[in-house]
Amino acid sequence: MQVKILNQNHKFDNTLESIPLIIAEIQQVTESAQMVLSHFIIDDGQEIYEDFDVYLKENIQDIKQLEIVLIGVEQMFFKMIKSASDYLERALPQIQTLADEFYQTPTENTWTRFVQLLDGMSWLTECMELFNQRSREVIQIGEFKEKLDELENAVKNSDLILIGDLITYEVLPILEAFSKTVYSSLAERNDAIDAH
Image (cartoon, rainbow, N blue to C red; front, side, top):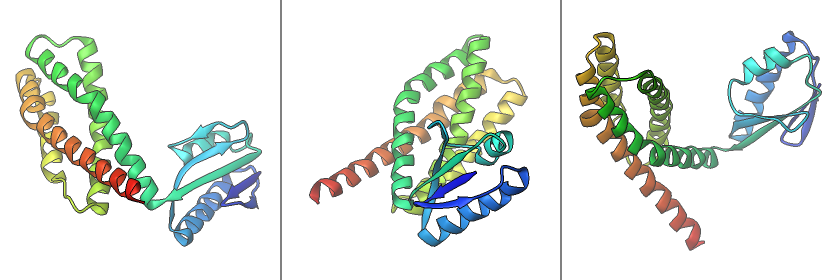
């Protein structure tokens, strides 16, 4: 299999034993180039953005060409911030609706959307951590994680009113504040780009 990283081709066997070697090569190149892994492009142009090792384990024997796409750390940061902003813009109105449903009798659909919310919160926590590493402004991640823990306990105790209250009065305000901070950060970046 041909593995292309930063316009350099490397040859690896299509075996499970090659996966650690491929990953080590990616890590070595990303560190020396001060870049981060964005995604894979497989033979047919298919793009893989997550679970890289799982994809390789499941498909290693069939891959002929694997292109490793790297991007700069700053570019990755703003890509993540833009994704978080887009997500929050769509999610915030729906989160209040979801919270309201817990004051009634939640349906199966309510619980499905709640699980999706928790998945989104996990991803947003990662975004907040990266934001704190790269930005002048600081997001209080500890408080957010604490509220998510309280939400988990409310679910374990089947306290539907508390679930609604925590979402409405604790989680939602933190997400709204993060949304404003992210939006401000994006506006600053766009202003800086326009100035050049």
